[in-house]
Length: 377
Image (cartoon, rainbow, N blue to C red; front, side, top):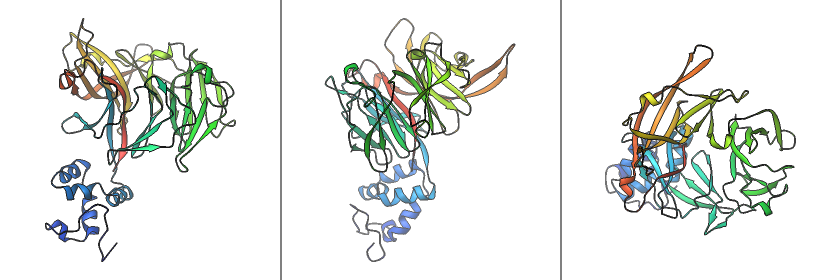
């Protein structure tokens, strides 16, 4: 600070209007109370305003004040493009808006979110596995290169557990052994270390419980648990098995005490202790698009309100090409059926968030690689 003013990096100190005639500390404190949408509008008025909105001083102050919002970030692939595009959801317009600059990332990476950003882990580049790791700062929409993993991996299973990123598998068959099948990234020291796992498994689905324990299902439907603080951090077989073809039940997510997932055009739920999957009822009756159009759920996750958020494709029946990507927030309620408990879904809102026609003739399909809410200031 010089002469009672914040030395905000990259910002000119010229007094061009009444706002800039105020001390910078006061300007930052005033802006800290605005919503992200208002800040975005303010940043568009001038380069100097954008510089102030992007400053680390404002970001840190908003975080300290608890001015935190959950924003939806989505990674889409438009074939035949070789790299995906990132988008942020505009809650008022209910459309996906592109994020720039684009990263020439792999289509076979894994993703882990933390507060303020998303890690993009591994994948393949020109057919070869990579150990590269990138971080998307979701506040500044800036990419940062992270120290690479010790092993190149394609589609590894990656999860945030107790403040560290655990990465499992993703190795070629001739490269996997108990000493290198897993590794862990310490967010504080920014270093990778191998994690010895006695019996490497092929993990199809996983979900983290209470940020401390990972539950996973292997190719045989065997349910495994992993906790860094228990049994030396190794996988332990649980006394239950998922007999419902787990490779076709994707995007496990925990809402309250129940697990949810997707399977083709349906949404499913179960008690974690039973893994007896049951279909969420009532969604097909509430679809907002014509009934003669196909419905294929491509991503399921949760929001801060504790509701389910789904992304799905629409296409005229009989045609394989999808035309639009829709997003909807779904609340669920419990009802007592004739013989057992039932869950019924209700659309709180639904909207077409991006259309294939927006990207023609560049693309012929839309693939969802990642979607989730991230806490940002």
